Structure formats: C-alpha cells, structure tokens
Length: 81
Image (cartoon, rainbow, N blue to C red):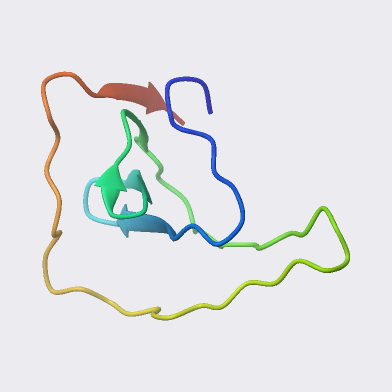
C-alpha cells in the first residue's frame, strides 16, 4: 500500500482489526504504519499468500482483544473501504 513501508523476509508483519470502528491498522517490526483502512462494515478474513515456494509464515497470535491497543496519529492517512 503506498505510504507504508514494504517488507522483506524475516520481518514481523502485524495487522490489527477493530471491528467496532471497522479499522484495519498495519505494523512492520512493531512500528505502526502511516496508512490504515477504515469504514470496513463487512466480515473480514485474513489470507496469507506466498510468492516463492521456499517462503513460510508463522502465525504467533490470533486473538480477540477487549479494546484496541493502538490509536490514530495526526499524520496517518485513512483510506476508506
């Protein structure tokens, strides 16, 4: 997504979806990315896809949070769904 940092192998990519606000935030190695998606008012599914045969993915955590652990910064860019 333009505005966010591209990622390479062995980096930690995280997405956090707030179903109350319909907002999807992106993180790379623990750093919240500039662009987020908001106004998502439908069921969300996360899909992992590989470009090369020797790539892998480990899902460390998939859990429902009681409340969001992030907030919007004034420099962030909201993209509507």
